[in-house]
Amino acid sequence: MLVSIRKLRLPEDASLVLSLNTSFTTSKTYQIESRADGFSLNEVNDYITKTYSFDLQSDEFHASNCCAMVAENGMTIIGVCSVEFQHWNRRAILHHLYVDVDHRGIGAGKLLLDASVVWAAESGARCLWVETQNINHSAIQFYTRHGFQLCGCDTSLYDPDTVLAGETALYFSLSLPYLPQQLGAIL
Ligand SMILES: CC(C)(COP(=O)(O)OP(=O)(O)OC[C@H]1O[C@@H](n2cnc3c(N)ncnc32)[C@H](O)[C@@H]1OP(=O)(O)O)[C@@H](O)C(=O)NCCC(=O)NCCS
Image (cartoon, rainbow, N blue to C red; front, top):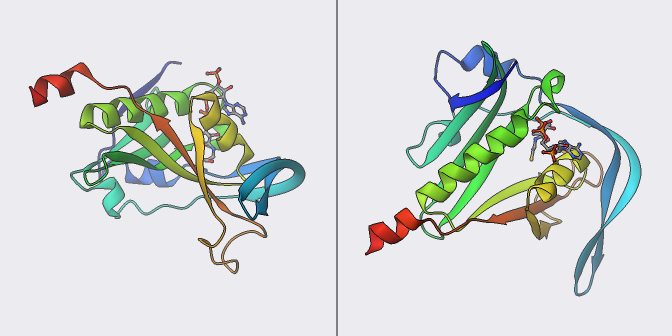
């Protein structure tokens, strides 16, 4: 069955989107090694399970400078994403990208990412930026495989009482092409 992408429709899609299983299990993670002049990532063996939660009431799914999309396999919603365009720095933020655990590896994540890239580029963004965690080995593989580059680490962002031991925020960025229609809008 072909996977297709369309805009999220609320409230119609809410129950299917909220029933997506966003969890991942991994046996490999990245350990952050902090140094005086920076940090490095070292792949280590570690067994971890984590589930992402999200709020469909939040601005990320509603605001006029945001775009939320779903991936469908036939009539079934199998994934969701939301991207925001920030005017002040012309950066787009990929806030959410989840494919249901039973439908991974068939290209839905890539299609949602591609649609986010197109929307961000058409909005005038110079890059697409995403926050993930050092423990999410598969997401890091996924983003770097699609051209994202590591652009930061914040060892103090998460309250250690609310995340897994050693969980640290990592940031990745994808440079976006300069679109001819932007040139047209400026000239
Ligand atoms: C990350 C995620 C969105 C990828 O979605 P997906 O539908 O499984 O990915 P796709 O099937 O589109 O894969 C696209 C490409 O990424 C590669 N890829 C996907 N998962 C990968 C993994 N774990 N390791 C290495 N490569 C991977 C695929 O091989 C494929 O490569 P190709 O295009 O060269 O063939 C999905 O695993 C997921 O929802 N994870 C849980 C939620 C999550 O972590 N979200 C990100 C939060 S920041």
